[in-house]
Length: 174
Image 1 (spheres, rainbow, N blue to C red):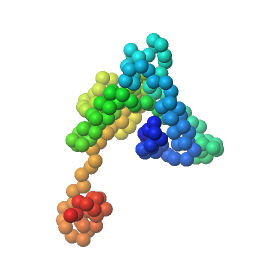
Image 2: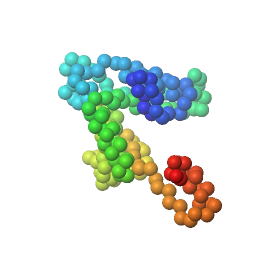
Image 3: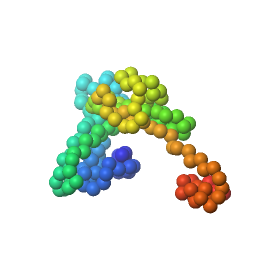
Image 4: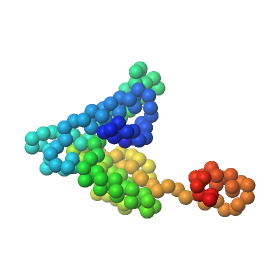
């Protein structure tokens, strides 16, 4: 889920009061003081004059109102993405996906760490091989970013046409 500083939301963590709490905490993180520089989470910005967390964990108990009645706990990692480091990472992600490449977004769960992209499943630093589904590995959240699948329909009969209309945007039938 992405929460913009202007209030824009992209995605969800499940909705309801728990999501509202996550959004409120994300907005608080976005409003905190930013280090001097262009907002990158490099070590040189920290520990000198101010302490600014680039990321922070949030744990919510979903066993009782107002946050939930379904039970369980929700563990969320909030991370501020800004500056040239974030812009470069977003560009790398978009490039990999538009070129049909598999990639892994590796997010160190460290308040001063910053996510990075691996384009090789043979291992990025601490991981070999990288997982096919999101999971926690060696203190980092590792999430595969897979290109959109291709739908291949062989045959042009009434069944093939119905399948194509379900799987392909209408503009593809011009």
